[in-house]
Length: 475
Image (cartoon, rainbow, N blue to C red; front, side, top):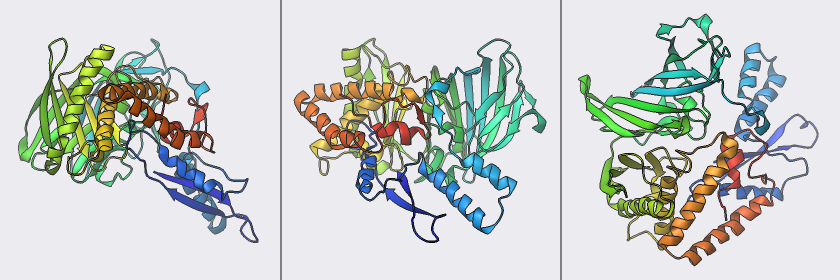
């Protein structure tokens, strides 16, 4: 995670320049919550060097680009209209809590088809669109970033360029049909060139996704907000020798071979979810398999997927998953609601872990452990994090946010649940001391520093930079 501190320089001839001090910090994911943004504590070390005129932009990187562009153009040449338009598009938009309003359109079903390739990936989406108010004539605005639009159809009729508006951030239908209709969009993306680790990207030979908070817009055009919930299906096609494992949310309905050495897998999630919980993984992975019998007698298949060499290190992770499933039934009466639960552990994952519905994705260090190298703290951390992401199945997935201002609700409640789980599995007193120690060492200094803000702020510019810097330490 990168942060920039912008300090105006003083001195002769330097009044129009800026000094960029760059602080690089790493998220320490060890602990009960994988979304602990404790890296911001490094800002406190910079505070002593700042003068009164410092400011902390959110997010800093796009704004730094914008400042650099503005300074160069003011000295070298006159800004062209195209550059002005790009500058406006790059400028972060501040989102205010008071501005929330219900969407004009809801999505009922979303059918996705991915054709994974070495140079590019084709994504086809078919969406059933329902107006919130019958007869609504408002424009339908879809979010999109780093996408190449191939085609767009409404009710199977291909639209002409005059029928929609496309810019760097949105695809807008000015006059959609007044009632229920289907929207088909084909986009082209390049996961191999996606270094943001958001959306669909390829790393270490595997395709992987990260869509929370706003990564789905890098996959296809969509209303990328948590109050748009739909039922998803996902068909994945890829070269079988390169990507023998094809995973997505829900239950595996069908799989088989295709021509030219390709194969496919078709997944269906019967429960509505927001797009930030969509997940896809494709690659050369092997699984540790087990079975969990729910209290109602249903059999759930459990699989933990890793590169082959890491499979022996997943024993404790499987124990932790089964313990979490039983504990949630015994304590909260919450039974797992699908036939399959997958965990994928990959080395290149920037979130630590993510609670995608039925397909949790983890950074390998939060899943793998062996008696030769792991400490008691490592085992405790894996237990807590596996439990945390599983508990999100209800507190965060089935019951989710209205908007990102409510992020602390799903995270706070789930942190409480994983703290209780870890306390019951070990020593409640030791767990309590550990949690309070983290609060004193990380959360309290942050709350006393320049990054402090309410748990639910009045506005934000970047979801993770602004909302999650409060951490997820809750008593």
